[in-house]
Length: 120
Length: 175
Length: 85
Image: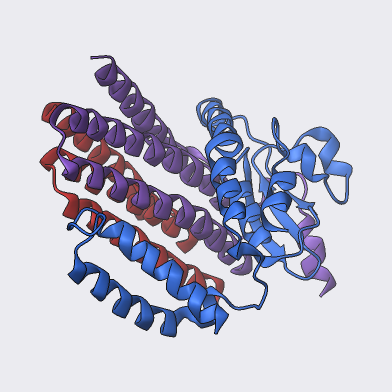
């Protein structure tokens, strides 16, 4: 019973994080700030939803002793690792490409990268 | 040759994790182990060039991988949660002050720079935009730049993280 | 227990629709790439939730492959936006 409550809390945090990330994508003014919202919030949401899945499967395994649930748990962990690693890298790739394509962060108070690019 | 062998071991371990629980020899059946060896040989032949590009074998030490696991589970996870609370508040209130700053943590190896860039992207209001591999400098987009960072040419790496010294951890893991 | 997973799937679908609005509006192609990345991440979560709701390990394997393939797709999109392609 305590495990069910923990699973529901994890699902709640995960859904809240993903929802706020989507709101951030719709609300923020330019590409770079949208990238912040998208990368961090959806990654945290994915981590907590996968945590809920892992806890559920662990509970079912303890009740039924079926090895299939442990395997599902292991694969979820692997999917989570792949997701977390690739999310950070693709955010970096999009940000760099956006800067190279000429989108400047208009709102920013300081831009050290522009000084380097103008030196070249 | 050592590079080929290391890539083969990594590919084979991944295959074993994905097929765990299929038979009686340990956790795996004889067919899965045989197929895994053949597939890992082919994959290693195809991917050695980029998976293990240098002859620098310090990441072959399993102790460093254990340290990486501890780093991800405790300091990195806590920083992620703190960063997300921060970003969530900024999404709701709309109080942002963005800017691009330069950080030089002084990391030399490519793997260390990779971990540092990924950590920066997932932690407090920062996002790696460009990295200079030769000098080890990172150009970081911050969601909210504090007033004292606007004047500085190069920001200290310790200032952008809150509780843990992430760059010290990365140096311990990768260098 | 399947009821709560159905609720989670419904909400994730709602979030995908929300990200699709940015995909449709986005003033630049970089904005659209950001929205597409969000859609991909949410889809991976949804596939994992499907896997646990129907108790099928194969669905989670599909989620791993989808995560890696969407990463490759985003990288090529980024190269196209950055002008290297």
